[in-house]
Image 1 (cartoon, one colour):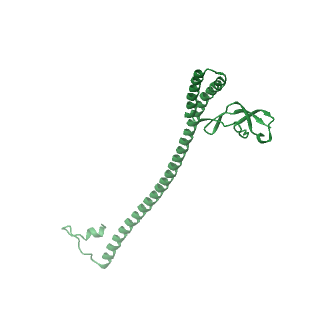
Image 2: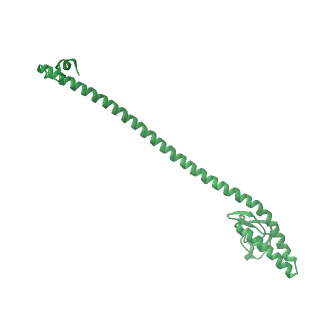
Length: 194
C-alpha cells in the first residue's frame, strides 16, 4: 500500500475514496505496476523452471541411453560368459574323452583276437558301455570306410593302388576317428586309394 493510500484511510481504518482523479490514476498505476512486477517475477521463475525441466529431461534421456547401453553390454557379457563356460566344459570333457579313445582302440583290437565267445561277449558289453558314455557327450564315430577322402575328418598316412571306382576313397582305417558336436575329437587315420 502506498503512502497516499495510507493517508486516504480514515481513523476507523477503512478506505476512503480518492480525493482526485489524479489520485485514482496514481492508485491504479501503482496497483498495475505491482501486478506487472509480480507477473515479471512469475515469468522469470517460470522460465527458470522450464529451463530446469528441460535440463532434467535431457539428463533423463542421457541416463536412459546410458542404461540401455549398459544393459546391452551386460547382455553381451552374459552371452560371452555362457559361451566361454560352455567351451571350457567341452574342453574339459574333450580331455577326458580323448583318454577313453585308446581304450576303445584296444577293445577293437582285442575283439579281433579273442576266440572264447563268453570273453568276447563280455568285452563287447564293455565296448557298448563306453560307446553309450561317448554318445552321452555327443561323441560320434567318423564314417570313413569307403567314404571319399575328406581332410576335415581324415588323416591319410598312405595311398594304395586300387581300381578306378575306389580312387580317392578310404580303403582302410588304421585308427577310428571321432567328432564331438561339430568339432573333430580325433581324425580318422586312413589309407586312401590312388
